Image (cartoon, rainbow, N blue to C red; front, side, top):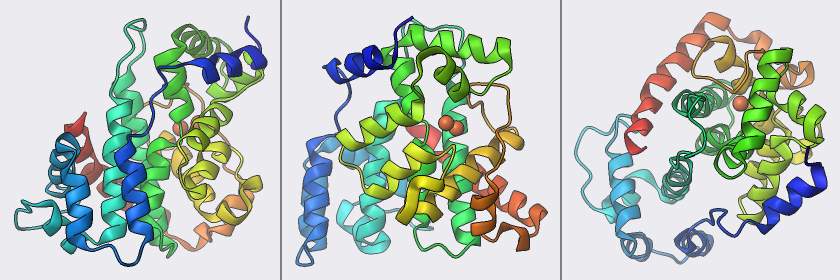
Length: 286
Ligand SMILES: [Fe+2]
Ligand SMILES: [Fe+2]
């Protein structure tokens, strides 16, 4: 059985590991300058035709719910604002990376796993709204990619992925508990390494690294806690499939920090279900 060191070596040597397209890097730097105009940003996005088409498809989807048709990127930027567009671009690129299916795995329902990721994004966004967290869109992305380490295993180390999956089912363990027992490394750590390599914002890196135990997330504790709770709530509500049959314990510190006790559970569940319905518009992109 490969150990932690070997797995990390293997991951860092994978030349085919997806890189975030250079357009993201370019757009992020454009967005950092207060002088960037909607036209300039629009030109940068439009230079990548496939990306531009996806952005338009996404902004015209039920997820954003705009009544009229948005037909140019510049129009989309004016309507949605710079920060939402940045998140739309990031989401479109990430979904692109996710959609690759493994040729070696046939007996794992990856579509249900995508559904878990989308549902977690939608639930994180609902919780953010409920708890007055200003970073709703970022919470959506963080929820969407919290298990990116599992995606990486599934696509690039399918044997390890399947071994972990069967071990979890047989021994009634959570996926990360099996990873720890089998290889002493978890998908949180693997995903965190990838997020670092992609230079994703700190908030996303922390949410990926600590979504099963948010305490070390420090300055990103509240968004990490949101993703932690969202992951467990969508499992409890049976949306999609997270890769094992167990329900993790919710961190009391995380739950309390979000003041979730003051929230009517049924209202929260309704809101999450509605948000998930809207987010399934994303599936069109797969
Ligand atoms: Fe996870
Ligand atoms: Fe998960």
